[in-house]
Amino acid sequence: PRFGDGNIMELAAEVSNIDAFSDAMKAKGITMTAGDGMALPAGAKAVTSPSGDRYAYFPLDKSEGMRIMVFERAKKGAIAQRDKAALK
Image 1 (spheres, rainbow, N blue to C red):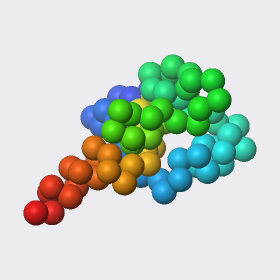
Image 2: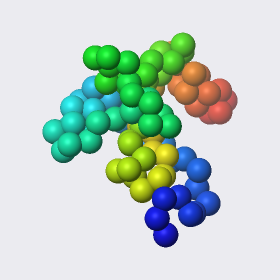
Image 3: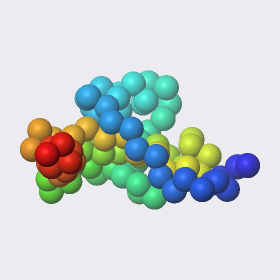
C-alpha cells in the first residue's frame, strides 16, 4: 500500500546528533521538515521543544505518507526525565 494504509501513525528514531543527521539527509537530497510538511525555521536543522529535546520529520513524499520523526534528547529534557522515572 502507498501513503499510509497501515496501522502505525508515527515512527520515531533517536539519533545522537540531529544536526549531523540532517546534513547527511540533505546530502542525499532529503530536506527534513517540522512535521506535517511544514518547513523548519530558516537556518534550523531541527525544532527545539521547550524541554530542549530536538526533532525533525522526513517529508511525507519521501516516507510514502508515514510520519517518521528523528529526535535528539536533551540531557535534562522531557524524554530523558520520562525514561529516568521509568527505571525507578
